[in-house]
Image (cartoon, rainbow, N blue to C red; front, side, top):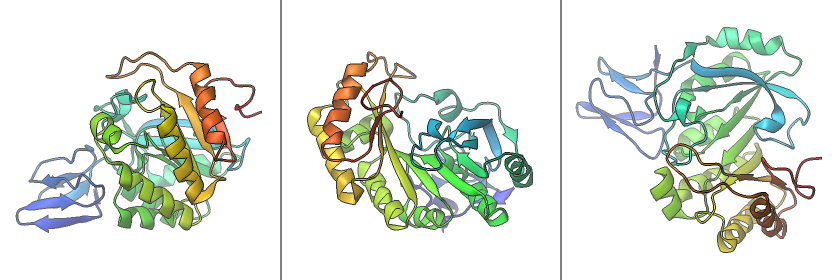
Length: 287
């Protein structure tokens, strides 16, 4: 088993410092993310290398439209997440225990090297909860491009360290309101905004995704504020605005194509590249 990184001893307990939850754990307890546990006094990355899925996807599915477009990418991810989004589209593999298969880093490298495109995406759930596995992969295969599809809900030091080894990242920004993050996702907005800025400053290719939920995070005011923030970082960061469909604990009606296009219109006032993520739009879909 791999020893976990980023923690401190607090008496007889261990405090995890990977993400802002900073779980304080006793012997035998797992963190909120279910991927880190105190075992015989040691802090262990128990989800290390245990993947829920393994697939070869188009890079556009991540979605990344401006990073090697037209290529394919090996994709995998852990049975773990540190947020509790009530609308989670992959809740079966992120919000509860599910079957996994251990994939050694050497075997993953061999799989990737058998593909035409030498890239890997840690995705599907929350890859940052696989922190040690990704860093170990980077050390053993520095020639393979690493992509993360992430909520970016992680403390500053581990995030900055990880960004040294990542070529591209798509950050799913859930909303531009902190109350939404707290009440719907179990997190805080400021952490994500700070990490967006850090990724950009470190030269990582960055794209953003926002899932539009009618009546919750798609007001004109919020979309304007979100777009203005992104533009303040770099107006050329691509933004993918996607339609929500009822899933997990949220039963709000689906987002219409017209609502997605309206959101794209607002964002396009401030940003160079705006895309309708999962609905066809003659104006905002990737041609």
